[in-house]
Length: 287
Image (cartoon, rainbow, N blue to C red; front, side):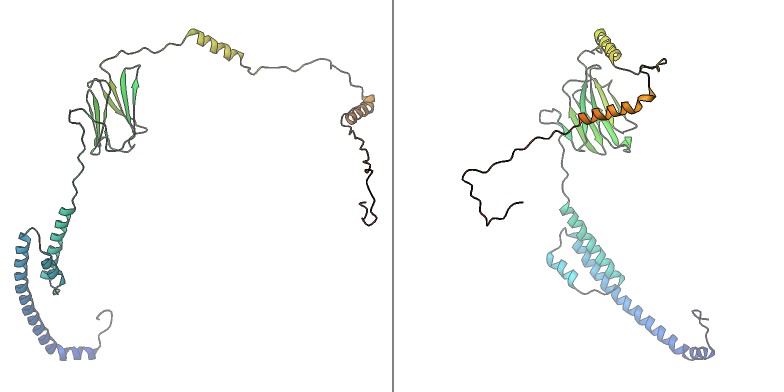
């Protein structure tokens, strides 16, 4: 069987007859290919030496590059390696040229004063808490952002937060106590809340509500109408019903309704023609 096809006896006889001639042809072709490969390897060695000399120079001339990419090359492993090395070298040279310098962000001015920087473009909210005498900075961060990617640095006159390598810095109007400052992250929203107590200032007490205001609220609450429990009246009815006079009562009600909705018609006087009016018989009558 060969490829799921049964080999017949006649085919076996033909194969035995041609076996010696086919074997000799295969050996000849194999020797010819070996000689051809030896020549190709010798030629490729010379080309590789030239390529190494060109690589030692920083930049190739345009003529040499055009010559290399325009000439014919054989389909050999050495030629493919040579083309790959040349293209990789050109790619590295082009990347070096295109590489742009990163923008250097200034966090301080010439006098050493901190600047406001928001490289990460984070939405934030800075407020003052008079009751606790502190600054509260809230940064709107993604809920699933890893906390290990955050760096918080609280200084007396500014706060710096690094989010995934990008800087957020904001200055403060008053000095804060760095040791008592805290940074917490909300478990529901993921926002970062930094509380920084001030060094100067007094903690203000909470304003107590006046007793008068509480009393006024109580009176307003009492004056508001609420639900009351009402009982049904039990006893003799206010008016006695006389079932014998039902028809008369219905007539009275119908008369009163007719008088109420009675249509009053206004009399319209007929308009007389003027003295100079002349009746033309050719004109047809309107009626």
